[in-house]
Structure formats: structure tokens, C-alpha cells
Length: 501
Image (cartoon, one colour):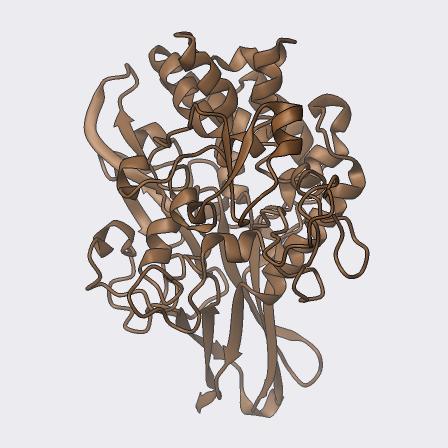
């Protein structure tokens, strides 16, 4: 299967480097699971089983069907089930999930995989003979395979808080909720009158256009048996915002044994950077307002994605780097600079909020000093209201100022579940974006000034990594080695520059 430019767009070739394919090989995921187990050892089997429901669905289904349990050590074995587990989220998992009218009942990985050997797809009247003869599966057309509800099962997850002994505390958090965020946005295509921007999860993450933006027309199987090319062909890139782990999988292939060659990871990383840089956010600098030697610079950050940015698991963050440069080329103000380890610094030294056990940077409507940084992130709190980086200690969010999607409304049914935290008093933190007021000492005589703003992104925040490394599990030690050898330069999502007098 190829696009108009002759590029291979067959599902396996595009899938093999994705985070879906590598859901159990992912060394960061393995490290995080090991930390949760180390913190609550009595719940080890429960933690493993819960995580494997969505990270190894085929192996988990096989185990449950036979009345057996799945354990993480299976990933190191050489059995048929271990190979199913190492395939992560594979073709036969998603394409056998049954349609449902009650999407909420499928949250937390409660999808239903059919047992009638039917493979669902979006194409009408598929020729079932080749698949039937080769695999004893029958392809079926079903609209649900292109519906966002399909993705909601594993991408709407609530975690139950426990103490160190494994006893539930009564608290819980919504660990990730991109589907719920998308529902409360202009991108929701399930409403009676969808907006012009409406699009399903699949429309963005498995696009039907090629890399040049042209609709794909191709046979849907190598053995097409004379069938006409299809026009609803989706590229199974599952492109998101993670460049770190694919690069580690590529560079540490001898240890991690991914199926994909280095070239496939390179292509995925390139496509990820393209999505981050062109479809994720936009920056706009407003006109500067001078009051004596003080220059006020409004910066608007617009979210272009169909959910919060960042979204998903609370390891991710985005932040603004802003520089003000005088007429002599000297930087007179800088907020949000970083070092080669990806830590946010001030004057070359990491901020206290970057260190394990340190404070956090609150959401800011205005920034007046270089040690203040606007970081868009979600930070969990435990039962005492203290900052925690353990999912099973999380009972709420101390801070969630991730950029809301366009159209997000507090009056939408169920909006409380995805409401921001810690932004009280910031009247322009709204659905679709946020405006920050930078107040900088910049005498007019030293101008005109050049203002440079950049939105940066980390799929793993340096602070979260530092907290992870406080644990000495074998999985953490392995990931730390890979992480420290990796390029930790934050990704550039958007940038803008302007002159101010």
C-alpha cells in the first residue's frame, strides 16, 4: 500500500515504531510501573494487571480467557503469550473491540474484545476470502472503528488512591482524560450540529491524508484480488507528542528489542515534530505597554489541539521561554531558559521547582521576575494536599493549568471532571488559550527591544524524571541510563518575535 508519492503506508510499516506498538517495551512505562509497585508492594499483582489491560491487551485477553493472570515478568519470557504482550497495542486488539452504546462503561480499559473472529474496519464490502483462508478471521465493515468512542476505553482512566499498605484512602484522580476533554470542545463530532472544526480522534492521529496533505487512495491489502483502491485509507502513525521514547527505543535497540528499524523511528519522530510544530499551538505577542521604565508585554498562547495541551498522563509539560533583548543585543530579561538536561534554569542554575522534593511553579497570570515561569502541566496532590508524583497517592490535582481546548465550557455536562485547578483569578484562562502579562524593567533609552517567545514541550518533564530517579528499582536504573544518554532538548511547539519600544 503506497500513497501518491510512492511512500509505504501499509499499517504494519507505520505502526511498528509507534507508542502503541511499543506499549510494553517502553522503558519509561516499565520504570513508572516499578515505582508504583515499590511504593505499594502489597498491590503488585493488581497494579500489573491493571496496567497490562491497556498496554498488553492481547496477552491480557488470552490470560483471562484461560483463567490465568498476567504478570510483568512475562515480558522477559519466550512464550507465545509473552510475544503477544510485547506486541503492545496491536492490530487484532483494536480491530476486535466490539461497538457499544455506553461509552462510559468502557472507561478504565473495560473494552470488550469479540470472540467471533471478526475483524472490524471502515471499508464497505471487504473481500473476506484472503483473510479467512490465511487467518480464519472475517473482515467486517463497522463505523465504530472510526469513532472516538473506540479510543475512550484506554484513554479515560481513573486511578484509586491507596496508602503504603495498599488500603484505599477513598480518594481518586482522573489520570488521563483526552476523550472527555475532546467532548467538551468544538472538535466533538458527536453533537447534533458539529462545528466546522469537528474531528474524531482518528482524524488527527490516523489521518487519511498523506504527508503532503493529499487524500490517500490505495488497495487495502497487498493481495487486492482486483479490488478498486479505497479512499478512506488511514495512516496508522498514531502520531502524538512523544519524541523521547521513540528515540530511546531506536538508540537502545540492543536492549529493548523493538520490531521497528531505526528508519521507522526517525520517520515517526519527524512526523511528531511536524505535528507539534504546526498543529498544536500558536503564540501571539500583543503591543507592548510602557509605564516609565516598565514594559508590559502580553503573550497569548492558543491551543490548536482537540484536547488539553499537554494531555494524558501527568508526566508531560509545556512552558514559555521569553527573552527581551536590547538594542545592543544584550538579554535584559529571560524566563523559562533550560539547560542540556532539560531542566528550567535561572541564571544557569536549575530552579528549586526542578529538583526532587522541591516546590512547584504555580500558574501565573503575570510574570515579573526571571525565576517565574509559566508551566502548563498537571500536578497531583495526596490526601494531605501535598505534591506527589505517585499515581496511587494522588487524590486530586494541586495544579492543572494545561491549556483547554477551544470551546471548552464550565457549563458543559461533566465539565467538573476536566476543570482546571489553580487558575483562580486569571480571567483570560479560557477554552482555547491563555494570556500572560510579562512586566519587564526595560528603559526606553536602551531600546528598541526585540521580544522572543517560544512554547517548549517535554514528553517527560525533567522534574518528574528527577522524582522517578529517587527510586532504585532495576527498571528505573535502566531507564535512567537510557534517559541520560538521550537528547533531552525540549521540543519547540511555537515561536513568535516582535519589536517593542
